[in-house]
Length: 389
Image (cartoon, rainbow, N blue to C red; front, side, top):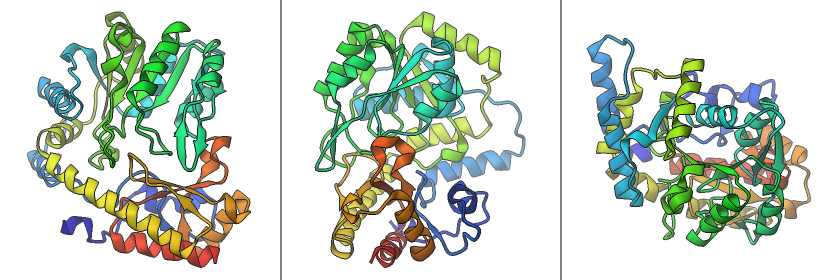
């Protein structure tokens, strides 16, 4: 467990998290600001992945690379073992990342001015990608009670009536929900009723902290699985965001053909030389590391919630069912988002994500990344307490 306790200096490594704070938060001097915002871990990647990448570097030639059948097999075996989901090899297409994958699906299966439904607060690229492709975004805000989010199915169905596509976060970011089978089945039923396609972003599906297991949406969709595009990636699970590799799983052959044509039209068919190496080592050899990191994250969540309750009682945070992201309700402080961000950055020297980034439904919240050594997490909470005292 030592690799989860050791503090690594990530500054000057071209890290978005550590080296782009001044630009992201519009501050003149970012020195001394502790970043606890973007969703990557401050832990090294699993040892099998590191060894595989070292071996690949020592090979010394980095020509065009293929995602081999072994890559498909690694994904298939992982999903079968972790989620009891049987994926056929020809259902799978590889992409440069979840965001490019979602963008390609939007562009392939919707037209300009089509309406795309999201359920905020939710991962910002869902609506940003749609807006940047001149689609109209429909918002069906989640219902929140005591920190627990549910879908407002009455409003959801109303919005579906004019939507072409629904982009679903499964599990949910930033709220940390692991959706129940009943909720998932209702989503499928309503999208089928109104003939709406679904993108199911399941990048957080391996980061489950509670007893409720992740259920892939397409797994339970039966004959309606053809309307679902499942987006998967090892990058959140094994802290490999910079490797940039993802999969689209689509059971419908005609839809896959359209996506393949889109890839040919945009030249996105070839991935970097490290993608197949990292993916196979992660899925084939790194499950023990994942079990360790999940325990670290769970313990860090408990620690953070306890410390926040003691040091800043006005804040409210509920342990998420998934992800390493803690969604914090600060509404009881009576501060505007601008005020609390100013206090955190200027006085506390700590950078969290403002909730409005996830849509208007996120106002009054902050997102805190706990995937870091305990000493770093404790430092961050102490900075928050100093800022909000």
